[in-house]
Length: 299
Image (cartoon, rainbow, N blue to C red; front, side, top):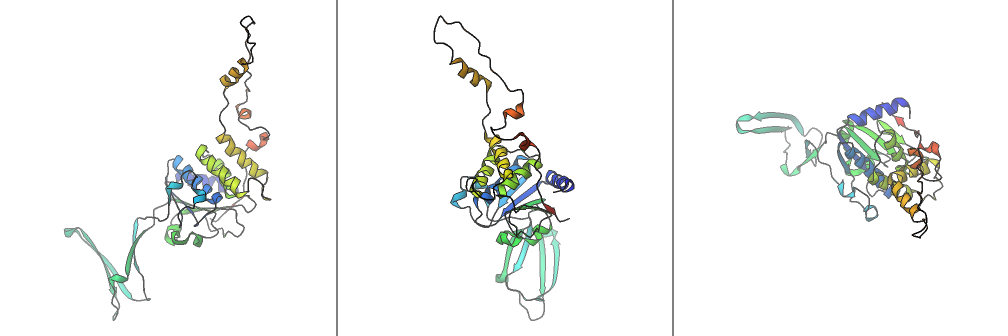
């Protein structure tokens, strides 16, 4: 991922007003947690956001934050008229006219000679939600989205494709595809941090569940230092803040239990480095620096 790519993605994310997050049906806990985290981050950033997949969520992902927001259908602003059975050339001409006197709009389909257009053969649907930005998560190709894949929708929006499958087709404007990553949640964690988006407790909780599930509690052979770095980022967001008064109270309980014993003040040492104080034991300080991840862009 070049600095130019990163700058372009940041501009895209900052300017987007209507965000759509999509994944395939029956996703793993890792994929669902990652998709929900992107959705929650978009909402937190003040965007209008939608998350959808073809199937209803499975029980195994029911405890993820935001799962009640997942849709199985997409509305749209464009009315599409479809002939369910159609032969090329059946419609010879299409015309429209406004009947303002009667507050009507007429759309006329003129068939070629010998063809009768049956109204029972027509269905209507709303497509094209006016999305500025679409995230696809854990999806090798757009067709994997099933009934939610709309070519018109994809051609009118910028696509950020996030996945860790080597066979991913790199179909997005930006492709954050990292086959070496142990989980999709690992990629999303670094992506959100690179975008400057805050990982609150809900987002961090989802991502940490995704990390653990994808790696079998960090036992997978694909686990690397980057995996533990992502976990550390999530845990720091979830860890309760240490309070000096609590430490002082504990120290005071160690005073001699005697009315005649001299009273002494027990000093409370406070680490002057806030960053160091927030770092879990055993986590190297250089893990707090920017994470560089790979990716490709199709411009």
